[in-house]
Image 1: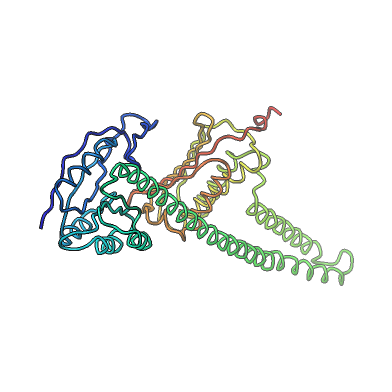
Image 2: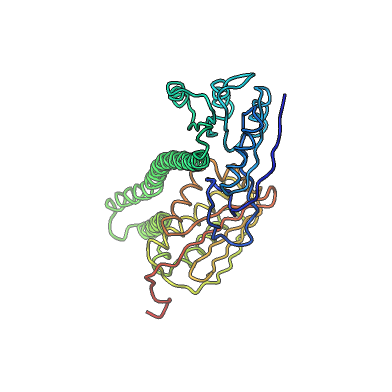
Length: 398
């Protein structure tokens, strides 16, 4: 078995190229990382041909390493250990032919471009090999075509990978949107069920009691004994009913959000959260109180609410710190707990619908929400969103 690693040619490009032509340096922040060399696996048994191919590729530009094999065992071993960026193969080999090499490559490294570089390849065989998955073929008596063929193969393969990545991202996005739509429908029905239960149980019971009391009053003489006490009881029931109506209305949309702005609404929600859960909630408002656009305030407030809901359900926390601040032209809302800590798997899970909904709301504002957790050290949720162009006046200065 013969395996030979040939000389690495001089580097001429900054990023890892997708073509063997010179690539322009990236405009990314300096200093750039040293690019990895293109790995080309050459299936060839003729040393003069190997030298010629190496020489032609060397004049093409980027750094590359050429690994030469001439047996099936060596070929399979290289594909299993580390698939190359490109395969160049002779068709006529002493131990096995190029057709078998292509078949093996299709099984072990189907994403790698495969080009025949051969002196014997009839037109019918060439067409058949292309149908079976070969990228291109170059005749040895026309090796001037080799560099353009390699460049084209690498470029097309990069485009194919990018297209596949985009399709996969699109598929995942569709899956998330379908899951989010289903979750929103479920949440909507749950909210309707909860409101219907509260209206039926609390308001219905209170109104039924008032109706019975009115029926009792209608049968009494003016000034009869007990009428004054009954009227006092009815007044208390009416006050309690008004309180229930206000509570249900506030839970649906707190009036403080529209009348006083986002910061007071967040403070109010944090106080409600602390009273309801006994989890200490520390507030740090570093933002001048303003009443922003309704859509902006609503989205930020709902993200905050969902964060607190997740803390109740999953975090097992005893303390929460909330910070609302300005960073240039962006609003930054940070919620940090001391709970178990969210994992990367949970953040990226397609069924983490609450997190997906928060990301979608942030994206609608032109911002983003990030989740960072450490095991046993809690979770930090950070919302960054650009302030809306249209702003209301500061509180009290309208």
